[in-house]
Structure formats: C-alpha cells, structure tokens
Image (spheres, one colour):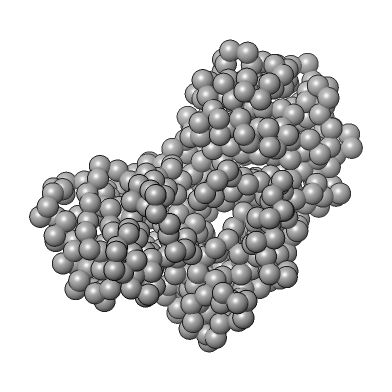
Length: 515
C-alpha cells in the first residue's frame, strides 16, 4: 500500500478510526484531521509563522495529537515537555526554545501557570486543555476556523530536549525542512518500516509511555501516517496493557525493558488470561535488556520483538527477532545509511571484542541549541556519541555495556552496572534494581546496589544478604555489590527511565569521580 500520510488519508477516508483515547473514546481520521487544520488556522491568526516554536505539557490525549499534526504541517518546531518537571525547569525550556505558543493541561495547572509567568509569556500565547488561570481555552483556537487544509503547508520539525545527567537539558535542534509535510513523512517512514511494519491493513498501535519521550512520540505519530489506529495509555499498568492488546487486537507497540520486567512480574495466571496473539511488531530500546528476560518474552510472544539503538540526536542500529535469537544480547547492526564505530579515548578504532565509546554517524545535521561546546564535545568528524560504551563482534553486531558516566572503576577494573542489574533482576524477590559506584579509599569505587523488592517479598537484612550471595554465585567477585539497600521504590519516570544520579550523588557530595 502506498504511504499517503495522515493528512491526505484523512481526507480520503474520513470515517476510518484513527484514535482511541485513554478513556476509550474513538476518534475518526476526519475528526482528527479537521481539528489539526483548525488549529493551524487559529495559530496563524495569532501571528505564528514558519520556524516558530510550539511547546506542550500534555498527557497522552487527542489534544496532544491535534497540536502535533498541526505543527507538522505548518513549519513549526514541536517541543514536548516532561510533565514531571518543576516550574523553573519548564520555564527554562519555554524560554530557551523560544516558544510562541504553549499548550498545557489542567492536570499540571500550577506548575505551568508559574512557568509561563516566570518567562513573561503573553496570555494570548498560553492555551489550556481544561481550566488554567491566565490561560485561554485551547478549544477557542479552533472556534470559527475552517476545517480545510491550510495554504502554504510546510513540514515541521521536532525540537526535543535531552534529559542529560548534569546541568540544564539541551535542545537537539534541526532546521525546518523546506519540503511538503508528505515528503517529510516519506523521509521518516524507514524509522517504522525497518521493523517490518507496513502501511494500512487495519493495523493497531499501542502507545504505552508518555509522549514527551521521543520514542513513544515518534512511533505513535508515524503509526498515524501509516494509517494505523493508535490506542493511547494514560499511564503504564502491566495488566491494563495486556487488556488493551486483547481488546483492540494490537499489532504493534513500543516498550522499554522496565515495562518488560513489569509484565513478567505478573502472576503466570494473569498473563495467561489475555490473548496477545495479535502482536506482530514489538519495538524496544532505551536501556540494556537482560538476556534472560528477553528470552522469556520470546517464549511468551513468539518471534515478534525488534530491538534498536539510537538517540534523540540520531542513530543507530537495529536487529530483527531472528538476528537477536542468533546473537543474544546484541542491539543489532547499523541500519541502512547508518554507521557504528567503537573508539578508544584517543579516537582510534577498537578491534572487535574490545569495549570503547560508541559513536554513530551524524545522518541528519543537528546542534545542541545555544551550546556549541557540547555540540563539539560529542563529535569526532561526522560521528557523534551520547556517552555509551560497548563493543562490536566480528560480524558487526553491537553489544552495549553501559553509559560511560555510569561505569564503575574499582581497583582499576571496569564494572558495568547493567550486567550486575541483570543478575539481580533474575532473583524472584527483586522488583527493580540500580547499581552504581560509591567512594572507596583504596579501590576508588566500590559496587553498590539499591533494590526495590517485588510484591510479596519481605525486605530486610536477610533478603539483602540473600541477594549478595545470589550475585556471588553468578558474577566475578570484583563485580559483586558490597552492600544492598532495600527501598520502597526506585526513582523512575513513567517511561521507566531511572534517575540514577539521585541515588548516587549523595555519596559523592564534596568528592570528584574519575569518570
């Protein structure tokens, strides 16, 4: 089937179901397309022109997709802001991005109103879904505007802020492409097609994570252009995900390893209750996935799991189910047009089987907005890195070891926390785990583990000692945690990203790490 893109398809088949919102309400392609068109007309009437920025703090919702579809056919930059940020952090992004329009949900009224006030954003540039003091109703932008496609349509562009580990987040900024929106969709299409996903065919895509993350945003957005129905989750719940897969006969979805782990923690009787045989393409990335966990998922779902490695800045590598089963633990080989190289600290290529810093080819030029030093530090020629370490095997398959900043150097030996975390997660009493380095006077660093116990497990000194013994049976001594702390919950965001610095930094206060 020809890839027409959402805007054309919504004109030709307006009655097709395009969206199921978190409340179960269905929205047709015609309704969604008409709303996006009205938004373009409404925002242009308020002075927005090509190259301007649109920022949103919205939950997964119909309104989010309306703003996104409007932005991407009007030549604007779209900036999705994490709803868990503070008012000061949101204000920084609003100011740094130069947003000319700000959409926020009443769920986040207090921080969004404070953020808009901090940067002096005009009232007629602030739009609320639900009531926010000082904001105009977002629905008012569409009132009285035509449903017809706008004139002088131009492809938009994402301006995504990297989460970072230190300092302020940085915007990955790319120029507005001088092409029609449909041409941009064609350019983006391989980002979905490489996973054997085809347009049309009555397919259904499930969005499991907040769409302020680039992966969930991009896969959901492209699925609309592939004319798939998109089902939105408002927040992650493992059993609810299974219910939605069965209810809507979901074919494609994107998940992260933490969500895989939560699914496998459900009692076997609960997992067996739901029919997930409709799944055809489950894409995942964001963190190293323990090999044993993924093998269990293959046993449950069959050969439908595709892994990839990339970044907001670009990428990357991917592997099919068959490739992963033949090379367990890999994140794949470079996709067409991409390049992966492993370099040492002097910039020389590492031989196969040697761990170094992972560099990727800069396919689509970008810069970190307002930070040329960070832009230059991340590059070597036409290659860039996000600080991950890994190795290539003789066949060119990439194996990630960890992020360089998370690597532990104990007694001059490198310890990769992801490897230790994978072992801990094999223990049935472990619901979640984080491993990092803490200061040690002789070794420089020693290995520390913080564990969230699984439901029904009894936290305490006995469990901590059991976990230490469990590691000693499976890992070389230098890799084993020297202590285990048990906590009620690890600091993760709704997409599963672990804020490890919140656990690690208190130990290093007033001291300097070697990494």
